[in-house]
Image 1 (cartoon, helix red, strand yellow):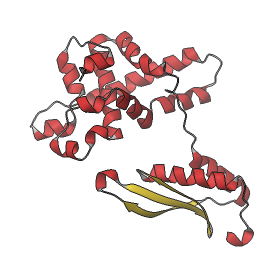
Image 2: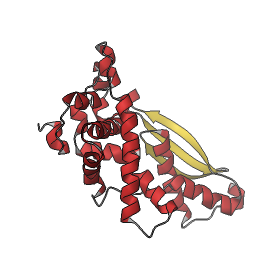
Image 3: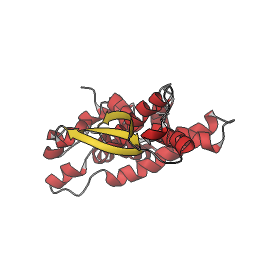
Length: 228
């Protein structure tokens, strides 16, 4: 397996910074150590925000603040960062406690995203803003990096409120699977009418899936008065 420095394209002068960026709290706690990556994650989050803001400011000179904010939110979202981390195979390099490791921590989106932010913070501390910018730009320059996901839940709510003057309701139908790999199934309804059902790894994802199915349904169906 290639080293993390080969994968990232950056060679650290201070290897301790790299080690700290890749150390999850669960690992240091089990070993009674003081250092782990949460402080570096905090720094990396701010460095990433600055780099992405500057990148978008220069790339889209004709776009307004609303558009820039939307694209930035997509780029720095947990989903986007976890996708980038998976492309780097970052989970294979993160030091996890036994419990986290046994429950699939190396594939968990939150751990991957947080570790990537810590890594960005470490690059900044070791090499400065130019090196951090070069590292982040490798992701920003990819055509699929700024994939903006449609917020179907908000879109559905606007449509329902406009047509029927009341918001849709979401209900968890059931959950299944082990604690670290649960699958939630959610349905969305208005009155007695079920509009859509969706599943996901968490409630938010399941609600979005249900809302998307409901939105597709309403493109070709009308809700009758007696169903409300």
